[in-house]
Length: 240
Length: 292
Image (tube, rainbow over all chains, first blue to last red; front, side, top):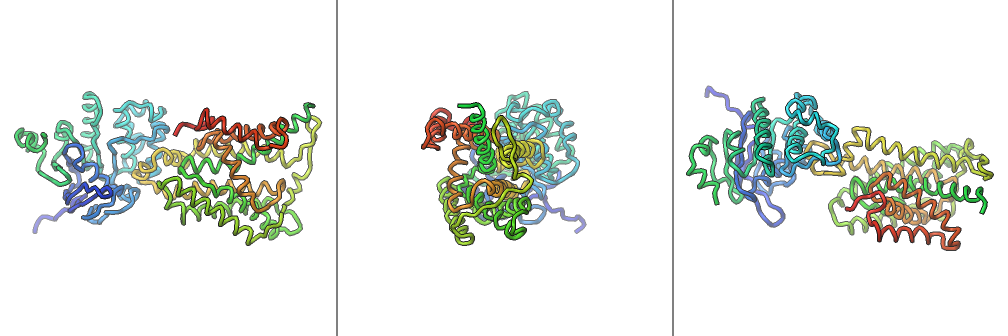
């Protein structure tokens, strides 16, 4: 062997998860290497959010392993997962509505206790609108501004992997385009991203590799370019 | 009715109000942040009173040592609160309110009996600290220095709590925990530790008020249940979880009680219960609270 084998940053192995008696994931396996942008594609209810919530520790898996840099973190409490370097951006954004933009960022800094390149000033540079709105209550932001704040807030923990759950959901096309640029900028700065999306526009514009999820299992995996170029494959995998 | 008589009633109402605020603020804080209705909060207050008496016996059996006793009682009850949270309350979060009520009620009975076992059923009392033992004449009325001190400490604690919640990093964390516990957890905060500290602060306030009440009221079994009912009326009037609501709720309670007695002598609590009933009908979330 001349090449040194590089361990994936995140490796999910044969993951099973359930909400009470209703089972959602049936043996999902995927991996994300450092510096990659990987997309979980699939329609509503196929298990994208559940996969992310299992990684974060909100829903301890009923089977399988979640390896973070080789350590099994399945069942860890969410704050432990976050402090290990996984940042979660939930689809419903969940900004602290009665804290100002600055307070939201400050709380996140205190919560994670992971100093690094992402400071409040650095995220203001990435999302200049947040600097202008820094004294506004989170609840008074538009949907797009809230989405930016929720990404910025997660960056305050200086994550090594960003879990982005449906960032484009419910946003106007112009706002989605701006957000796409922000996330691309993050990727170019070397951030590793696991993205969950229903639509192909946002995801295929960013992703290096794609996993297509269906009924709680991986149906297809391959480079994003393949799905981008092959309309027939795309229709087979993603249309009703 | 002379104006000095009315003033005297007013001051009496204010003293009641500030005591109630000290107790109810902790109750309201814990409900606001953790959504726990803690019936045992009055028991913490009672334990604070007994601990203060006990500390005075240890420190200075002939009298004196009051301030040290107050600190010992408040800190002791704060620790008791932290311990109860760690051992018991932790498993109650997210459960139905009924379980919380049953558990905290059980705690009321246990702590009540434990206090009887340790300190007996006799009335105990503690004398006011010498520096505040005197009184002054205001508007032709005699006001004990100690009640003036209590009237001053209420707003001071309210302001300190407001500063803590709104002007410190710890306060921002608490408010974030109140808004979205799960999200704060996902950002890396150990919300369990935040809850324990919150609970300790709440119990500390209960212990503090229990200790401070000893020069005015005697320490007897049953003081826990008596106070918790009043504290609940205060937070219902002011609005559960609202700091200023609790403050003004206490002030209103104190004045309505003080002047209500003049209108309905013999039914001292009638006016406050009537007020609470009206508020529950018109504005169930309280004067300063928000609809749940």
